[in-house]
Length: 193
Image 1 (cartoon, one colour):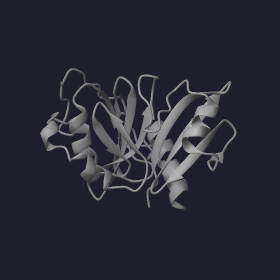
Image 2 (image 1 turned 120 degrees about the vertical axis):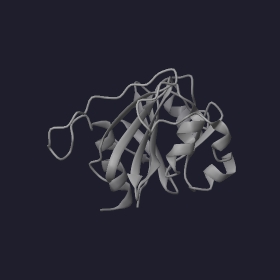
Image 3 (image 1 turned 30 degrees about the vertical axis):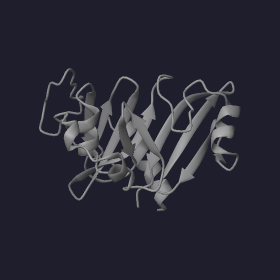
């Protein structure tokens, strides 16, 4: 299976992992955290001093990088320090992975959703989804931007689909979905090899 297809499968599995992949009876109800409550050891303590520098984080990838509240989020970078730097204001969900070992984890913040996958016992950033127009890509595109804005920011060499366009850079891609000529969804996804 090629790397991009595997990444799409991973993103799909994480997004729909409400039921366990194995078909066994398991409790798949989400663990919801707010205001710093910790339900289990996988929850970050929020120690921003432990987070890697922007340069160290960006070094994990030659692809797209997204910044949220001053924290650089790089696809395929180890997730623990990034989640810790983002702080405790999130809801959390995990389910057995359909594509990898361990658990797929979903951290939902006010304006973004961060998804991770596990490989060799380490969680890595799998995807970042922008939820509203209060955040923008490094190129200045946000939900509500026009298709013309996207083409001006990213160029015309993207791969067009039925409802959007996708741009690949290094080991990640960004998907922008349009409705009535405006961006309605933006997702960064890691290409996992």
